[in-house]
Length: 308
Ligand SMILES: Nc1nc2c(ncn2[C@@H]2O[C@H](COP(=O)(O)OP(=O)(O)O)[C@@H](O)[C@H]2O)c(=O)[nH]1
Ligand SMILES: [Mg+2]
Image (tube, rainbow, N blue to C red):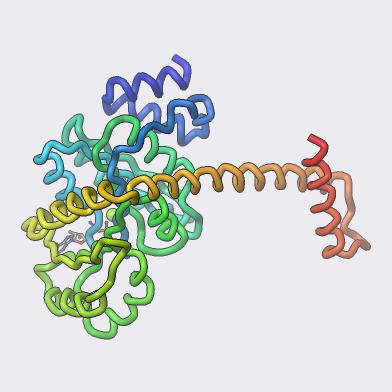
């Protein structure tokens, strides 16, 4: 079967094995072979779930998936794990994958170096999972770095998960999370300080709005399941608001701009690298002024582009 046939089949059957094969093609960079069927009419509610390692994002997602399934929603999860720089292995993905429930759920983990931007193939996977008909696409991301900023750009809704903290820890936390969240979840509600943390966040975000959406704070415990139903309610409430306004579409447009930008930048940087390695074979740096050489290289590169 061609790549395109594999992708078409996955969209049609919606079977986990077929979808996994199609996503692997995307990961291998073969998305151009079926780019004409990758972008459909957007339907899925794309939710970014972010927060520092250890706050309970994966545990929360597991519970959330169960509740969404009970309501008849199909759910795909993409977990973006910081790859260990030494082994290149993902740290947290496998635990999630084992928990896949039935054909209405799909789990995939992607590992990426912590300092890198959100990989293009992760966003293309979101588009594909939307084509494959999932109602919800949840993206788990470590709460730091460029990946985090990028995820806010491609999601309809951003959920920031935090754990109970003492006073000055909350102040420190504030700086990184003020702008990004539509919903703030204080997880580990069974631990001390949970109530205080939630109250402090209530104060911080008292009048905070994201467009027409009021920022919400809730408490959850993934052991008892407390509060996870409230999270589901809020996600549904937000989805209906997004759909009532033009924001559902404008968020998808932002995601598609992200893809277009990344295609341009990634292809450009590949060509620059190729140009540089060719230039190094024919030019010598000894006796040259590196600053002037850099400018000459740029001129040479642009001239080469123009000749195409
Ligand atoms: N006390 C308590 N611990 C929790 C809760 N939810 C998750 N944890 C624990 O927090 C740790 C990290 O959880 P995990 O879901 O892997 O966090 P992630 O790194 O944010 O994905 C695990 O040991 C969980 O058992 C909770 O509601 N209460
Ligand atoms: Mg995790």
